[in-house]
Image 1 (cartoon, chains in turn cyan, blue):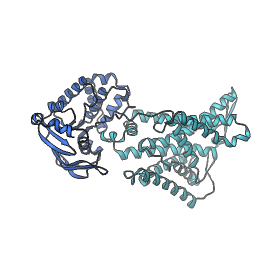
Image 2 (image 1 turned 45 degrees about the horizontal axis):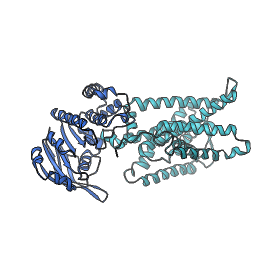
Image 3 (image 1 turned 60 degrees about the horizontal axis):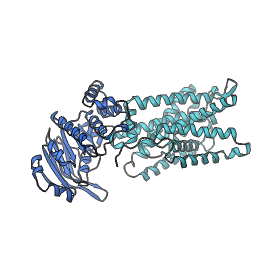
Length: 296
Length: 235
């Protein structure tokens, strides 16, 4: 029972982080049909913002808010710098500019800050542990779960109950038709990037809560996780991204609990094998996403 | 109200519309006939702002709107019902309608009134208000897209093949509805393959063939023209 509870908390907390990562990636993909490879750098931007504002002596929550805000700004900047100027031209061009923007941000961090890890201030609670029902777990796991539940609830309310949310769901199915109803393309795309930045900012703080420091390449792993989670869950579905995140966390955690010590370092190989199996079974991901509504 | 002159639309190297000109007066229902691939839909989508014009001009109420963005055209009072029907399948019927009122979202009261009025006009949509749009039948989806277009309170409606793929009784219903919309003073450009149905409701007609306008006249004149079938078959 205790082991099961421990397992459950691990899956839920890791899955919460993965789900938020995946959602931030898929919200832009759904509308532009393009993977934003600079997504990992939004996480990096939030991390370095935390590092840079740490001498200011602001309360930690205020610093975290500034960091998330900077990730949102960086998200919108991605749209203006890398996407908007070439969006109408070709998909390949946008793909390359998103890689270029990612490299640019990473190199800026290398050049102006340092290639070495920089410590990020974290409040006491991130290193404390919580004990209940015989289970000892780091408090940050519980924080991650709570943060994800809150964000997913707000996100789901936004997408279902507000006109802009409905417009974003519509734009993800059929962008041209949404525009022909008067939904402005630029507003929708910028909003998607802003939400992506917001999720990246929160993910960054939760992620750094696990590793304690920021490096220029910090965004790579979250980007990869987000990408795999969305591929499993279905690239065109928001629910799929969340499901994919939790499923990936479930696989990772199961392998952590069951693999013998000397095989544990090959955990990712096992995870990816399972991902391949899932894709052989469901090439479009678990949740297909809306049909385009087009007649043949 | 609408004045198209010398319009040309290209898809890459393919010229879909070649130097066509047409006009619509306020309150008029004009139909654009022709076979598959004659360039009717391209003309309509270009007016809607969804396709760029390669040459020529489109003027709406005296203002040049050539290659305007689709969202700008909606704000000018133009609503479009494309051939592909394009219900948002995972949005509920109600959400589809609410989205149709995007440009007037500040006017919550007016939007609610229009919604109630449209639900009264289309009881089947009211019954299915909370169902995803994708679960509706073809005819219901067609009603939904027309109702959705009306939610923006347009003064000018672009209708592309509303009868395509629908059962004859549903087609009759759709055309009754188009006649009702016309009586309410709406200016309508109707693209159709079902020439006899379209000519029965239209004031005037243009016949397109291979991207050009081959004939124009009042609905009665075009209906009386003996070479109508030939135009279609040769298309």
